[in-house]
Image (tube, rainbow, N blue to C red; front, side, top):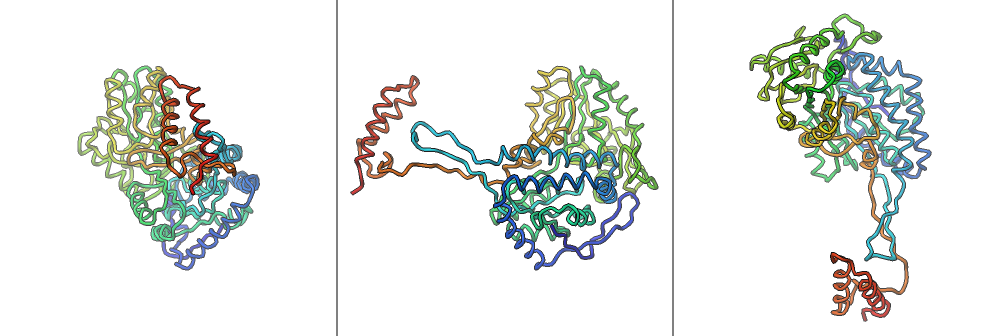
Length: 524
């Protein structure tokens, strides 16, 4: 792996505003060299046994275990996460994914025997699971370690070379330099290219075999447009506006704690974080009172607090200045349109530290309830019936995740099916992402394609269909010459096999007649 940088884009510590280092876009020649190395090493990766690829991926696990404190320090310095958020969602999750895929890959990536229909009797069908070639992974700024490592190791296990363009907001340049120097991972199998937005666009123009993008809807559409011009396959994991539906039969204390975590972990900078909360009217006041009370007791970051080592910080700072402005705009818009500030709000204008915020009496005409906020906020609304809750949850252009909270499991499954999204938790939130066995992805404006699970490995593969026939003097009945006799026999086969009551004897007789013709007829 190589890291290419020079100087121009400032990477800043959001906790205290200090400039950590500067980066710039690599030259055209450097990008061309990256692709040449990727395509060269890919042939070696594909030739490796899967066991050898697994051994390489295990080096990632050993590196993370050995240098976890260093990893956390660098992540926190660039993102402002609380240490526990960084540990759980980045360090721990990477270890879990590696552990799972070391066991899953041999099963998923092996060639398969496939069934054939009776009309192809005597032939065999197989599916070869092959790599695509060179994968371009473009990652977001909110989980900069996890989102680089996980798709990269999955693509590598499938036999691909990988080029990663991390967000210029949190490129983790010092971490990747240390990783490549200390992990002993296969050289050039995964290359991290540090640069700005222009670098990402130029990498797409160099025609990778697939693009795996995680980020905003707006950027995803631009990348998809660029890919369409060259017919490059693409996976898009885009934004979300996740609804959480709370019915009146729940354990209030447990559900309040779950909703609070689902909304405010990682300072709300999760594409599947709770942004819309619908509470059934019978428990609305009691539930919201307890939610507000507990939220006020959370320990957020603030200027001057060293959260790099502070294990008691619940909610870290936000990461990107432009995202802070969006959150501020959404809060102000909601208040102007009649929402009630129940707790939190904009504490220090211009600061990256924002306190967890709950807004009551929200409506869907407010940005806080309709657009992706991506910050430590909850827009709270009331509902009466199950049907109303489903309608409200689906009243969104997004369809990434959701959660349903109820003791009635029949209702939980029923509502989970009715919500139009890619991921649902019942009596929890966001834990779909913590299960490497589950595929992850969205519908509607939240994108398409699936990441993780068996599907996550296969998305980086060419599923090659292979039909095998024996070499003999037999002429297939559907080959030339066409004759009225063969057409009649084929029709008899169809009629006997697909009739409501299958006629096995008639089918066998006509099949033998066709075989006899196949042994005798030749196109002269």
